[in-house]
Length: 147
Image (cartoon, rainbow, N blue to C red; front, side, top):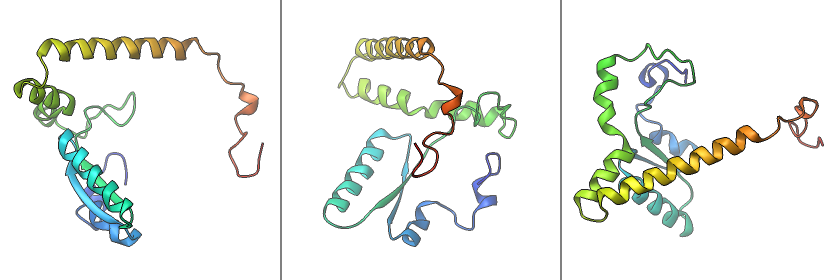
């Protein structure tokens, strides 16, 4: 598939999941924005595998909120499409569902968000503080049997 070609213009099949039998696998398509549906699909796949039912290819359908890479102008989607999809953020949907069902409070969700942002900032600072790899080693471990 090409990065800016719609799937239906680059594939003979409507879904990736329906290709699974070609690889002797079970194919499952799931709403990738529904955390519970994804967890259920994975749970069933693990159970099937543990019972000797073989591998499962899970096609979790979700929306890519940004371009394919930094600097991608993302001109192949309309602003209307992008705005419509912003309401499908699985993190936001799950947080809302958990608060609405009384599993957590809004304050707890905010605390988790703050904690995650802090952990990510710490990780980024750690990565930026690391020294750059030695360019002379760039081709090491690229091919089997090489040191």
